[in-house]
Image (tube, rainbow, N blue to C red; front, side, top):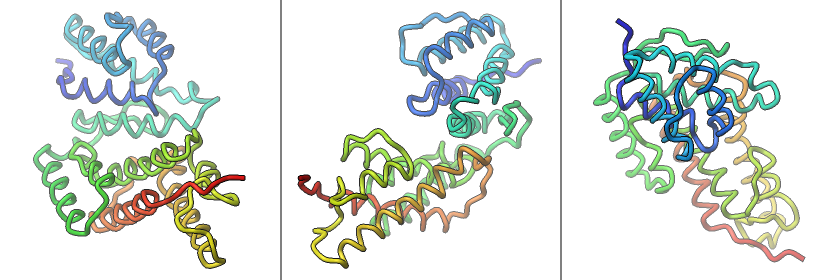
Length: 267
């Protein structure tokens, strides 16, 4: 008998596919639902709610999940991302996290393949609690602690670090009004004379060097955890807890420096 997705699994799939930053567009969702013969009962809702309702109604009516699997296969065809290849890996990462408890995964070719079922929720919860406790003892920035969640740690620690790094980009955009990402965002926010954000008074050569060093540090973190996701299957990158703690502490330092940064007057 064809296995069904649980309610939680359907919610996770809908959240991944309908993610505001990395997910499908409304037009893509409409086209894929039609192509797979899945009714669209809530087209005016937010994307994740729209997909959850559509997937749930389809599975209940058909008493199987084949149409949902077909939707995932069609959504992840690499050819769909020829013009925007940077969208593929972030979406694949989110989907694989959602599929972890279903013993399925999307491979580099966009195919659905069998996978080792993720660890139990209690194990993921234990990991999250231990990581959070250790980081709290280090005085880690609260904006980083929110990423010590069990759903991110069901597979390994990589996802918590990845999401925490994304939060740095979000803070840079919020503080500057920029819409860029990666090294371009860092260059525009922390570079220039004066920069949009300064981590010190920039009144001496030493302070200006510190500003440049901080910008290079942030770019390095982005290069390690943002850029590779467009090129390699980092969802399977094994990361030890000690490495995750050190990296999250580094992200915490970046957050604190950004919190204390000023906006120098521009001529």
